[in-house]
Each structure stands twice: as C-alpha cells, then as structure tokens.
Amino acid sequence: MSVAMGNQEHSTYLARRQPYYVDGWFLFSALSLLALGYVMVVSASLHLGERVYTNITHYPLRQFVHIVLGLVMAFVLAKTPLSVWEKSGPSLILVALGLLVLVFIPGLGVKVNGSYRWVNLGVARVQVSELVKFISVIYMAGFLTRHVDMVRKSILGVMKPVLPLGLVFGLLMLEPDFGATFVIAFTVICMMFLGGARLIEFLTLVLFGLVLGVVAIVSSPYRMERVMAFIDPWADPLDSGFQLVQSLIAMGRGEWLGVGLGSSIQKLFYLPEAHTDFIFAVLGEELGLLGSCSVILLFGLFVWRAFQMGKAAERLNLRFYSLMAYGLGVWVGLQAFVNIAVNMGALPTKGLTLPLMSYGGSSMVVMCMVVGLLCRINHETKLDHENQIKRSGPWQYA
Image 1: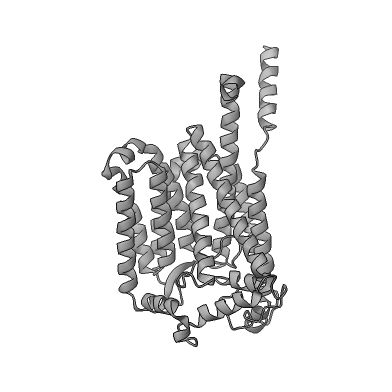
Image 2: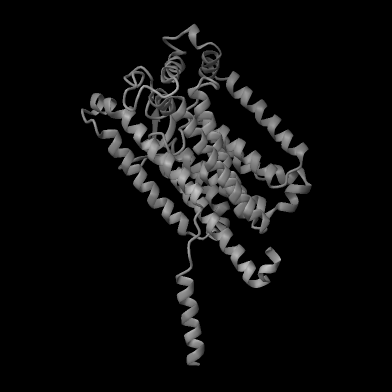
C-alpha cells in the first residue's frame, strides 16, 4: 500500500512539473507587436495628452495599464483548459447578445461620434463589439465541432448557427458598427469553409454577405460619403477626404527609412485618430517603408503560427482546437489587413484598430486574450500529441 501511495504521489508530482509548451516564434511576433505598438502610441499621443488633459503622460500611462491588464488576462486564458470554452459556447453567445443590448440602455450605453458602442462601468468604458468578436469565434468553433456531419451534408447545418449570429449582426448594425459586423461575418464564413461546409454553400454565404454589405453601404449616407472619399479623397481634401489625405501624406513622408522616431509632423493635429485607427500611418512616417514592412511581416508570422497550431490540432483530430486557432488567425489577420489598407488608401475608412498596437483598452485586452488562448491551444495540442505517443509507441509517429 505504501508503494502504491508513493507511486501516486510521484505521478502527482510529475503532473505538477508538467512543462508548458510554448511556440517561440508566435510569442516573438505577439510581444514584438505589443512593444512596437506601445512605442508608437507614446510617440503619437504625447502632444495630444498635453493639449487635452495638460498631462503629457496621460495616454502612455493608460495604455501601459491596458497592456498590463491584457497580459494578466492572457496568462489566465493560457492556464484555462479549452474544455471550459467548448462547453460554454452556447451560453457565451447569449452573453454577447446581452452585452449588445446594454449599449442601448440609457445611463449604461455611451454615445461617441454618433455610435452606441461602449458600456459605462464607472471606472472604465468597455467596447462590447471586441468581446463579441472573441465570443463569436468560440461559439462557431463549438457549433462546427458538435454538428460536423450536419454542416458537411446539409444546408441546414450551415444556416443554423447564422440565426443567433444574425441577431448579433442586427444589434451591431443598430449601434452602428459596420466594421465589427464585417470582421465577424468574414471570420465566421471562413470557419464554416474550414469546418467542412460544401463549396456551393460557402459561395452562397459569401454572395449573400456581399449583397447585404452593398445594401448597408448604399442605404447609409455617411457610409456612401466614406466610399466617395475613398474613390477620390482629393476632391474634398479639407472635409470628407481629409483623414485619408493626411494619412497618405504621412506614408509618403516616411520614404525608405522614415523621418525618425518622434519626428512625425502629421501626428501634430493634422492626422485625426493618430494614436488609434491611424497608428500605422504615423509608424510609416517615422520608421518608413522598412518599419512598415517589418510590422506586416510580424503580423504574417503571427497568423502563420496560428494556422500551424490549427493544422497540428487537426492532424490529431482535435477539431475544436483547430477551428478556434483558424478562427482567431483569420480574425487578427483580417483586422490587421483592413487597418493597414485603410491607412494606405487601399480601402475606405473603417473604425478598426490595429491589433496589439493601437491605443484602446477593450481592443488591447481582448487581443491579449487571443494571444493567451492561442498559447493554450498550442500547449494542449502538443500535450495530446505527447500522450498519444506514450499510449501508441513512438514508431507510430516516426
């Protein structure tokens, strides 16, 4: 009996000493983007803090707090078993709907620039659409895992998850938040295709989404104004085309190596939202083409490693893990692509932040949560692979 107890204690000790598997290249990309983003936020916001709050460190200190909170949340998610998320998907989508309703309640919802996107919690304001993006990926991964046969064989399997997400899209458009709606819809459609939906159904969803997008743009005067400003920003460079013109000037001034860190002129009240949506334009001006390409490569590395995690999980038949990794990778990659394209004048202006780089509490914390969740996916996938080798013998994986 003492021998059995000794073996049990030894097993418990080994379990506690179980190594945590880390993807070095993934962490390198995430932490590099985080560090570079903070440097650029400091550079782009010092003058703004002095003018608005008479405190030059207002925005840098707040962003530092956002990053610390985000890293704490990333650590929590990196330690949380994925089974918790798999079981809670249906409940989380109800939470998402509840959060989206809260923004319309007087006293809780906060209207900024004509949109109800924030909930006032007293000590801070939360942009609920960022949490909704995170929840939507978890919900879709769980649904596609539970109903894989129905998704692959029937149009009903593809349309069924669209019903609760349709309510999410409707509430987002009422805020209005077209950017978040587009990101979630595109991510969900990609997850369906990767989850086994037939090509004809995938193309139908894409076409349906495009039609709804065009209708949403045409039916809204301010969205049409943004599209016209995108087509020819120089037609009205002092009004509708002002933001895009200033962004293009910033990118052009940077040339190959930039004007130097902290030496941007466009951030000095010429370029609106220089520390948030247009942080990439300031980076392009100060660090030039070299700095811009470095950021794009870091995002490419981030998305590539996320897809490699999904591929590794798929090989081990860990469907929920793989779909979550794919979904998170598509989300981050798409949002980074849209933000950079907007800054370079390749897409109409949209209120989407640059992941892990732009100023903002909700966006930063949620993106750090994405990093933590991907770390957990990598760890559990490698742990499962190791356990399979122990059960089956190493020759099976030679």
